[in-house]
Image (cartoon, rainbow, N blue to C red):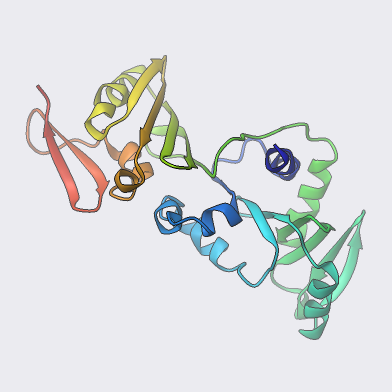
Length: 251
């Protein structure tokens, strides 16, 4: 419960209409035996950004958008300030937050909002996030270890989430451009072990799988591309499998 409350605070800094978002229980995922399999579900731009923050100690959870990183945890603010100053950086104040600016006044800022909350981004983005948090009441999603929002040529929105425990719970909510696309996604979900339901142009898919089964597929990609046609009549293709593309006859 405390983790969910903390992450609800982190979501106040993130625009509700952000099309690309990754939120992760950082410490829980990195300490899990399934860490590598969970992290491969993260889109490459987010994975690259998350890989660059390993030098920050005390991270427990993160929320990423293409312009902003929100880190929640237990941070040594004085150590972070000392590191910034030692590298020629400058400490400035914006409202109640301290902004660590690199030497030369170029590059990302680190905003020390509190001992449990940091922001990383350009100065304008970080300041806008601080302003947003003062008025935002958006709680954001909860109850996951990884939550990803993406878009695509045929997808207005895909919200994908994982919860790891003894087994793995997978859930996807996809909004397509047509009801036909949503129906096809639900009809074909069983081809990779998921159940689904349709509500207009939206499809909801879910699965409860063993840890072993989870590691055999890149689930998010498979879900997003399951509708891609095969060159063979009456055959669909499933992507994201370790063994490559799998073709399944429709009967």
